[in-house]
Image 1 (cartoon, rainbow, N blue to C red):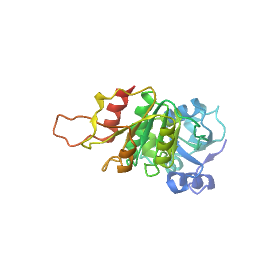
Image 2 (tube, helix red, strand yellow; image 1 turned 120 degrees about the vertical axis):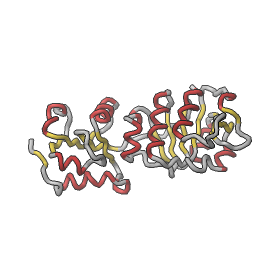
Image 3 (cartoon, rainbow, N blue to C red; image 1 turned 45 degrees about the horizontal axis):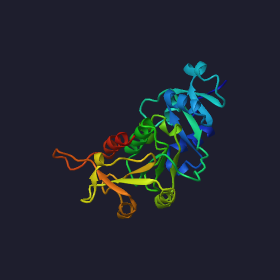
Image 4 (cartoon, one colour; image 1 turned 60 degrees about the vertical axis):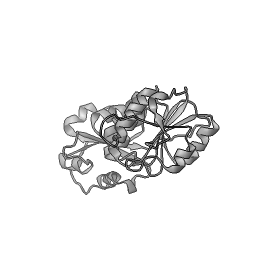
Length: 246
């Protein structure tokens, strides 16, 4: 097997573009052995795999393996120290469910990739069934989001679309909608006994949930804070509420 030594190699140039959102039309990049193992374990379609000659024996069971030099691997990484392997993964082909039943998480315009990834990982750990992202929520395939998720996006379906179309279907399927907000009319999350099927909405870091979302929710909830801090990080707040509901 030959080793790609040039950063000007056409495949390398094409793959490097996937580090930018505008070029991610059908696939994205993951980095590191853990994410690669998760991708393989959960049946993700691995289109290309790039690694160093040092690790050739670790990837003999994969197709489309490309051995590269350290400098070339750095071209495909957004970290200062590449983790030895980068893989191009095809977007999953997800069919939106005809009927909703279970535990769902909705992120309305959460903008920090680290927060998005951490919240998704937390929902995965708590056994949620699916996640819905608003159109303005941070990119699921941003490198920071992927690092924070640690492979959770391989474990459960994640959909991005008009958030209020999702709300409409949830209402049609009689799913209880719980939205977090510091509004005066909200109640402490501990006072809510969640039904077996529900959707939890977490809002934007700065402005919280939208007025329209507040109007659509069945229950507005908050975390009572006896200390002096005005608010909690959205990922921390999500963790507290998520595990209180399951």
